[in-house]
Length: 440
Image 1: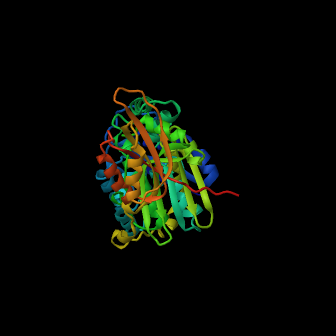
Image 2: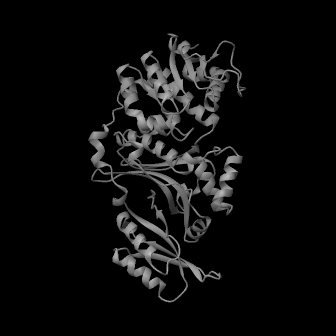
Image 3: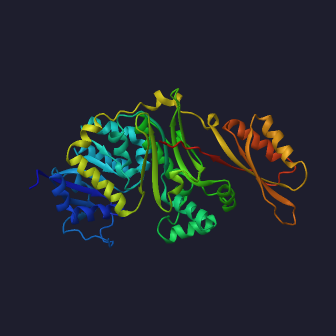
């Protein structure tokens, strides 16, 4: 017998909203048996009440009237699943003001206005739960906030966008061009008709902003994150990288240095082919987190889709219903932006290794000129690669791998290399990320 009944209202009856409704309607008995709580779907609000969905609601639940949810005192939990940062924000604030706890999967809204919404929730003595905002069905938020609570988080390395990972996996394993791999992703439903926010890295940046905010306990905005997407990646560079033992991934990285600086970045990254993240294929997500006590941890699973994301939303419903989220939310306190701006590191300060590809004239002395410029900027080489190419222009690729160097020096060197008469195209540069791994 259930300890209590919790009534729930959903705003947004799209893909994820349909999945949440499906679980609540079909698996309520299973959830009650495991938790002692009966979850009841009381209201679903959407501007389109006629569209066919993959789940059939009982009569009287679906409406286009938001006030019918807000004014229903019996609905304790409101779920916002419409996306966006304007109307969705207003809806969440109205839910909180109406005395309802809020659950959301809205990564963009939390990344840009999280602290404001958290403050409103604290003022209303309510909570906001947001497990589904990052990495789909992977319980990464709860892992950071509870499972790793004993740890000072040192670093986060994440594959947080399934669209990009699917594209790069196909380019790597099937030798497809970017355009062909993107088309495949769209055909399979892994990419939107307009995939811009995925492939330009902004989606990953929103998720990194949320994860790093709670990991490092400070307000982090998307503008604090250096972002570079995969839209300009050439299959040739993936081939050369693979030949040198590297796999290309779009990584979201948050690092806290020993002196308290926080570096945040999203960009294509060559990582060792032996690293666990290199083996994450297709539309899957994975996050590796390093804590001072636990060392390295790894979380893996489906990062998007109706049912994985709905699973995370329902997990939040259960946590809110049991009172766990409210207790934890009381202690969600982020240092405001004006107090942390000075500790956010700039990309120019970053120290990394780099893959540099130059298309150069095939004649004596080419590498001598390249090495001279790199040396002038205090950059040393750890590896070189050159292939014969038979073309009428007598141009060949020259690939160099640098030792650790500061981004600022590398940027200046690239500018000088581009000015050389022997360099026939804009240099290509991809960062090499050396992810530490625990070992016995």
